[in-house]
Figure 1 (cartoon, rainbow, N blue to C red):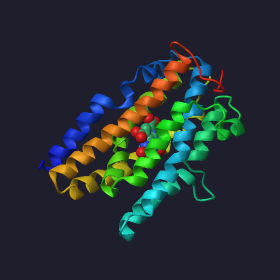
Figure 2 (figure 1 turned 90 degrees about the vertical axis):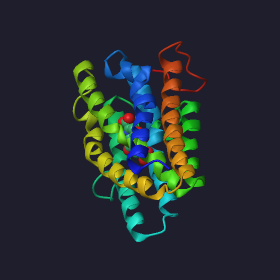
Figure 3 (figure 1 turned 180 degrees about the vertical axis):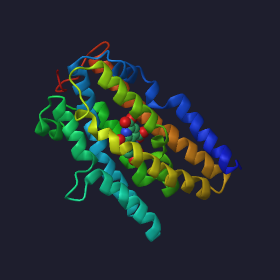
Length: 238
Ligand SMILES: O=C(O)c1cc(C(=O)O)c2c(n1)C(=O)C(=O)c1cc(C(=O)O)[nH]c1-2
């Protein structure tokens, strides 16, 4: 058995090696080396990830055994879906897309999305639905690393692109407080509930799987819109 602290440090090591902040597409995005059409392609594809997060959280919520756990997970649903008065993350992502000049209905229709985005995101939703609660919670732990990438992205994009401003990127501001709150709970949960060495290995594998599916989404964007720049049939063309 690893101690809870050792488990946490192995989880952090996975992020240091595999989190999508290291992907060449994100480097280009943050450093201002993409054109507007390429940034639009990123936002349009990532919409499907954002829109699917509440579905995956709802499927996990249904399997959580205690009111305490369900309350905690329900907060995530409200963060993403809003409460009917305050807009949630999905709406704020659509505002980001519109701020970049995309048509909202076109984004929501998913017509221009890359097939690989669908395969990667659907794999995440399915993983959370089919694996143990422990693995499902662990797969959310990429959020341990997201405040770093978000601060880097927002400052880099504001500095480097004349077509984005603070209002366009407003999606990210609440994530800087929501993500650490999500992580504090989920990390505590896996450290407490992974009670065997095999369980700990499942936790580590779930985080690797999640890093891989975030990476695969950027591979697809890079292939279609950077190099060699071959969008598949029917995909968004800037
Ligand atoms: O900007 C990013 O790079 C990034 C990464 C991640 C992540 O690591 O999965 C999430 C988000 N953003 C995000 O905004 C978000 O709402 C979110 C929810 C989850 C999740 O797995 O439940 N990850 C992420």
